[in-house]
Structures are given as structure tokens and as C-alpha cells.
Image (cartoon, rainbow, N blue to C red; front, side):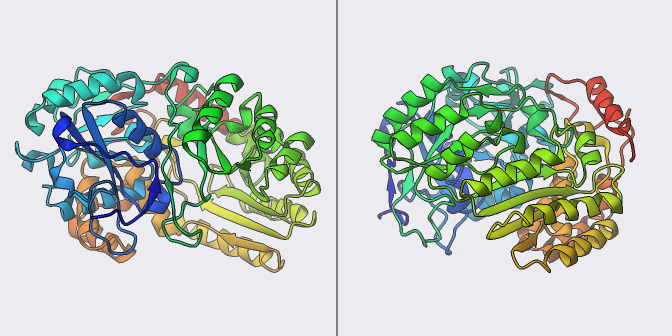
Length: 525
């Protein structure tokens, strides 16, 4: 049976000639999963081993069966089911995929004939406890340093119960063992493998299976971030920022674009703006007649030369993220940019041909007041006066994250959020070229609940998945479990034991408390 989605560079192997069959699962639709790098990277890493076959699974887009893209095999036929957890809200989809496949949800209910279920990704590193009753093993950090030992260990496992034998492996957390674990990470990105023959959907641009940036080659320029913005998960769990050398990147592109003949390069990296050779990299891409896709850029990184190169690479829309609604709050969160830099960056981008701009703000930071919101409105109006054809303003609530200085902070009061979102929309949408959007407050609360939760949270996830994962399903799940959302979203005491304390991220509690104290030491005016 042919694959539903025709693709370039699909890997198909003879199952009889491999020792381990891995189902690589992205718990959301194909379009979302194949836009980013993680699935392409993991797919290449696993399939680089001759003794392994790795096939991909996604949440059905159009009610298609839940089978692998490569050979239409059901999930239960694989030895290992591996989830990459990029967003907390996808936890319900993890359980829905297992349930639909006939795999027992609870790890304690699985027997020798059931697959081993593992998970990794930023959410696993952040806090695996909400899914600890459902996942046999988590990878904490980046998998490359332990990949071969991990695969060799999984090959020896005859039943999921034996996974405790892998608890001694660096970077592996086994919920059954409740072991302390330290994150693993690549020290030098030039030494890390990069996928060259990348999977590209061979479908029409309007197809629901086309990725967000179209047919692109994803180039990982940097990994991690050293900025230390006090609200940012990646800035603390994935530090330091590690760049690839320009020479290495040029080599990856030269070889990769032969295997993946597309005309666009998407630059990947949470600290992409800090890459010291970004202008030169863009020039190299343009010199080869490839288009450029840069999702967002720091305002202080925008130069005339970079803006020209982005436009020459045929990009006409870009995102700037002031994050804080005022200069005082940008100082409080350690953003490291001034209002003048934001306005100047917008001017440079517009003057060089960027016609559409997206601005990303977060509301609900500690000590935030109505005056801060008004500053955000004024800043946005100043940027609108520059003359962009359209400005998309995305306003989202603060979601406190584990391992950050704000892990002890409460989720902002919904009444405060609703009041100020209403104000922002009223003030900005009277301008014809400004559109305001943002995450639904209730969904943001659920995301914070999943981010900050313990093992008891899993019962709510399971019921919400069973009831269809709508907001009504979540309300019903909370009610039936008798779990208080407010308990998880409240302010925590600094000496309180937190569900993720067993994960060692190289920044101890004292360091995070000092950063929190620095935030509160910022002047209130």
C-alpha cells in the first residue's frame, strides 16, 4: 500500500534484516512535525544504524489510519515507540496515539509482547513527571552523546519491565527507578551529525501536508542559548549556545542540497541572532540562488546588511520579539534590548523591503502594571507608523517554566489577563494594518499545569485524552479527578520541593534564586 504522503528521501528497510524497529512519533499532525528539525534529525540518527529501522507516525490530518508513513505498519508492531515532546499541550495526543494503537497506557500494565515506550525533547528535559506513569524511559537533554549506548541497551531488553537496567546510563530517567539524572549535551556542534537527505513532502503548496515554510532544507546553525532570559526554558536547560562554524555549515549545505534539491534554506537555532557569521551565511545562501527562511531575529542583531540579505533571499515577513511590554519589564526579564533598538530594527527591515512584521509580547510578568501595557501599545503604534503593510501582534500569557528563575512564580490572574488583552485589542485593532492574536487563557493555564505538574497530573491528561482533548474535556477531567488547577498555578515557596528537582541541569537552586532576586531588584518605575 503506497504512502498517503509522497515524499523525497524516505528511508525504507527490510524488517527481516534489522534487530530493532523504532516508531518515531510526533504527537501532532504531519505539517507541524515536519516543519521543524527534530523529526528529520532523529529519523536520520536512528536510520544511520544498519541494525535499526525507524519509521514515522503523526496524529492523522484527515482521518487516515494511524500507521507508519514508510510501510503502513501499525504502532504496536514496533519494538520501541519513541515520542519527541516539543509542546506540553501535545501530551494528550501521546496517550491518544497509544490508546488507538492498542498499547496499554500505563507502563505497569505492559507485558513482554508490548513495545517499549520512550520520550525525549525539551518537555522531557523540562519535567517528565506528568507522563511518568505512561512512559517507560525519558532522555534528558540531547540524545547524540548516548545514542549508540541507548540503542544497544534497548536491543537487550526483552520486556518493558527490564528498562530499569538502563537507569545507570547518563541522561536516562526511568520513572520506575525514580533515579537522579543529569542532562546530556553536545559540547561542540561541529562534531554532531546533521541530516543531509531530508524528507520533503511532494505535494501542492496548498495541501494540508505541506510544511509551514514550504519545501525547505532545515539548517541547524546554533543549538542552545546563553542569554539567560529569566522566563525562557531553552535559555536555562539548553545553555550554553553552541554554534556551527561557517565552514561546516557551507559543507552541510553543499552536500545536503544535492540530496535534498529544494530552493529554500530554513535557518534553525534558538540563538540564531547570536551567530557571529550570520551575514556571511546569508550571503553564501544567496550566492547559490537559494531562498532564505528566518523565523525570528533579535532586534539588536538587525543591520542594514543583514536586512538586505534577508530580502535578497526573498523573505518578506519576519518576527521581532520584544517579549516584555515595557523597557522596565525587558530589564526585569534580562532581555537585553532597548526600545530604541526595537524601533530602529523595524525601520531598517522596512527600508530594505520587509513588508510584513510580527511582534511577540508576553504579559503577566512579575510586577507588571497597566502602565507597562500602555507602553507596549505605544511602542506598537510607533512601529505601525513606519509603514508596514501588515503587523501581526501576538500577545501571550507568561507560562512559568521549570529550571528558570520564574519557576516559583504564579500563573497570572485570568481577570488581569482578560482585562489587558481587551485593552490591547481595542487600542491596536483600530489601526487597519494591525492584527492581534494570542493563546487562549484557559489553554495557557492548562499548558502551565502540564509544565509544572507532578505524577498526579497524568490522571487528568488520561481523562482529557479519553474525552477528546477539548476545553470541555479538560474541565470534565479536572472535576472527575478532584485536582485543583490553582494548586499547580500558585506561587511556590523558595524552599519547596518541586517535581523536577531530581533533574540536574548544571544550574542549582541557589543560582536561580539569585536570578529571581535580581529581577525583583529592578526599579518599579
